Length: 531
Image (cartoon, rainbow, N blue to C red; front, side, top):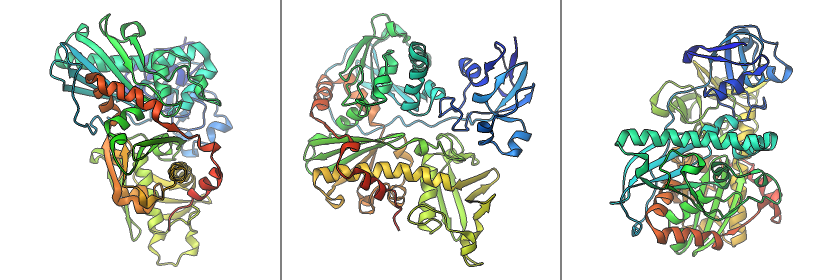
């Protein structure tokens, strides 16, 4: 039986001959980026094979690896078959990831106080944020956060549902086990920090999108993937937390917030309740940006919603030098006269581009006229010799790219621009369609409320400078943080807020964008960059 040695984790993992390297590492709890769920299309699950004989790379693997990569033993773990003993060194970034835990909280009356403790959870596709609440006082006494353990099954919900489609009941069990393990590690951390017993946890409230809620509860999510997009349930769910595998007392209650549709979930319902969108007069747009963009428009309290597939580019994936929002990720950029200034998370040395960084890069390339309205790079040879843009705009192996950093080399490629273009086109077309449906123009919006992890890193200029939102909205943008978790906190402590959320899902109209008149024309127009 071959043995895999993971050098930079001092791990030794035995496995059957012929095993898939990524599967063995993943099953052993080794962290690997795998946005494509191991299909070999993203090129992110890289390892360096230091010793051991392995089959030569197939053409699909070579597409993601340069000659220099292959010479150094870099391979995609999802495409490597283990035939004998081997030593590998992980290449994926594994430093700490800052997770947004705070969010806007309205005044409310806590009528569900009791003895013991409660847990409020924002269960996101990428990250999980958790708060420990003293149910006697209603005070949050601690919090923790982590990467969602399902990351190795794909970055977005569709990749994870595809895993269920490929692996059936086994896939459903694997995805549930991954997220349950993540939550249990976080619970154990809080138990140790605050010296409490698991039997003291009275209730856990989970705010999550429809897919994550299904996968947490071990329910089949495959119906969410394609028309007619039918989930097993939309209503709130109450279960015994211990019985689904959570490390709690035997009588701990688990409550999951209700959903509006397959793609407008409990996390958005939580945000609408926390931000009191229904109570405001005037026109307000609520926006949560991630691999999916969820939008809710309030017109004097009438709620209209839609969702759009922004894709993984805004999470730093499908980008040549992209990465998740971790230490060392570039999160903002300034380009002046061909000189590049970078700002990274935790002010560490740059490692790659997270979603806010790639959006800032495109904003700057557009502002400084490196790209045309249609997103195509200018040709370097068409620029005057003294044009400062020639400092960083290059032809590399017949492909145009902008070099942001040399050590390590971090670049923006034409494909990166296209990925951002598709994401911003999806979101802007959703905004435009909602406003058209309601019969109002962008200048009639009183406020744009941006929620979630991604939005917290974005200056308003990145949203409007790339055309993700109309320019006239730049001064109307307000960031509200993690309203998914604050909504879970409200539902934990307030019966009236819980009832309000369960009522909201029946009052919120949902638009299927693909079925709206002229949507294709709106989307194509939304792909254009502002000039």
